[in-house]
Amino acid sequence: MTKVLSNFLLKITKSYTKRKQYRRTIEELRRLTDQELNDIGINRGDIYSIARMDSDMNTNLRGWV
Image 1: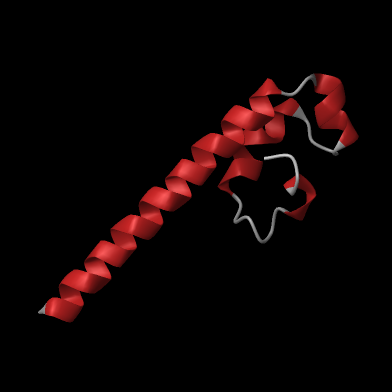
Image 2: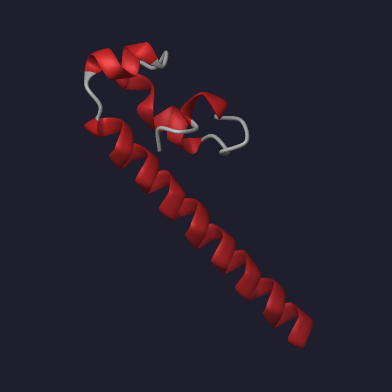
């Protein structure tokens, strides 16, 4: 029973952390100008799909968000 509860809490924590990262990525990218987004190869319309990606896959954003 303890292991089940522990796994449940771990899933909730991971989910919360991922959602927080998603929101922060969107917030940071929306602050950039169109020119800054273009410089890093992102269109404004791509912000949400990029934010949904895992941070490991999203290497072009390192150092920006």
